[in-house]
Amino acid sequence: MIPNTLLRGMLPLTAVLLGGCVVGPDYGGPPITAPRAEAGAPFMRGVAVRNVVAVDPPARWWTALRDPILSDLVEDALASNTNVQIASARLLQSRAVLGQRTAALAPSISANTFALNNQLPVRDFVGSGLGSAGGTVPKSLNIDLYNATFDATWEIDIFGGKQRAIEQAVAQGEAAEAAVADAQVQVAAEVAQSYVTLRGAQRRLALTQRAATLQREAVSLSQQRLAGGAASSLDVERLRTQFETTSAQAPVFQAQIDQSLNQIAVLVSREPGAVDALLKQPRAVPMPPRVVAIGDPGAMIRRRPDIRRAERQLAAANAQIGQSVARLFPRVNLIGNAGWVSPNIGSIGSLAASTYNLGPTLSWSILDFGRTLAQIRQSKAGADEALAQYEQTVLQAMQDAETSLSRYGNQRTTVARLSRASASAGKASMLTDQRNTAGTISTIDLLDVERQRLQAEQSLAQAQADYTTAYIALQKSLGLGWGLGPERVALEIQ
Image (tube, rainbow, N blue to C red; front, side, top):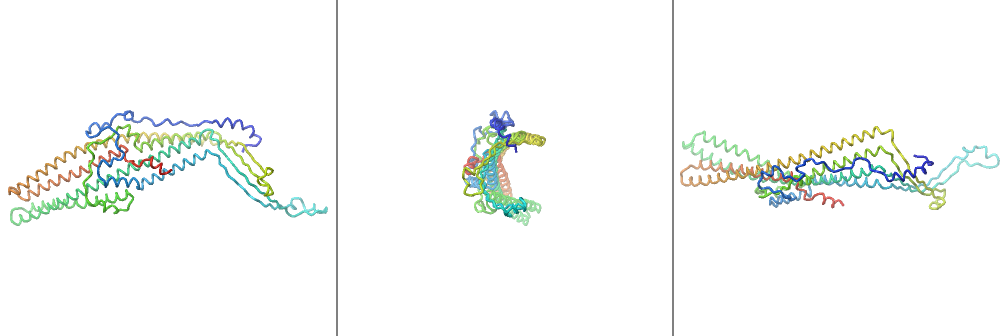
């Protein structure tokens, strides 16, 4: 505390300091990490994909798959998924921190009151000999004391340390908002991917069971021919090997079905088994639309929540430097109290019993400069880390989008070729059936051609599932899927 004799002399200085400044570097926005992309250039891989257009894509991309069950599941997950709820709770925490730091700019006021009864040993202080002149000195003296005061303290943010703390809290809150949106992007994609895996496994299981039935018939016919001397034991064992190999695939697909059902249930915040009745009936794998909107890389960088989160974390780290620098300078507090002190409770509130104190205090941790300078270096290193993290996030996002575009385009080509192969196998099966009806080929040959047709359908079913999965990955890489985005979350919080 500064002696009272110096307070009056410090008042002019305090008035000057109130004009203050905000120390530390001002945040100038994120650096340009991908110049070509941020200038509006198109995706490199998009040039080779025929069915994509450089227009703004819809946020609710799953509706383009035209599967009502999938759309309902995604919407349900966005509203109830636990990862989204966790991110939303962290957003609430960050908003509370902002409120706390904003409140720190205002004065702190408290009220105190007490009533004391003091018993003083008078005789021990004045000496027992005083009573020999004819007066009697009491052994003790009772004194009542009543007090009611209001205390106030206000730290003047001269060098902007608290302002930087508020800047940091605002940036951290916006990073938390982006984290909510990023959680929704992830959840929407995970639900769709699990759903496609489920439908693909159901389709392949049905094809496998059909193929196993045909191969069982082939084994039976081969055994009959062996008994009649028209076939060898080798033919029988070869067909039995095919049948057992095909049958062994059925449990694999059933395991995929069970796993996907459990994943979807958890993603919509239900216990495993809760969605089995809804999804147990097989349906076709939903296929992507004929034309897909992808926008441009610059829009993708502005849209992706993980990039926004990294940029806001960079702003928060920059504000932390200012907070550390502010510790190098003195702290000025205005303190004051006003109230009443009296031995008579009836005097509380009267002018005669009133008392007050008012004045500034100055504190300066000069001997802590070494520690403070180390904190500044630590804050600057944290900002450098956040900068590198932001640049890495942008570049990885570019890589993700370009790779997803390439995979999507190539998978589309694969589906087109396997569709032609499946059609050709179907035509061969039809012609073979006609020849079998005419008696020019055996039933064994017919079953073998039918087996090849089912294999072609198996390959096509897997390729179609991979195609839709590639479409989902593309939407995720573009930063889409936060249909309940930060704006709605902010409204729900208020």
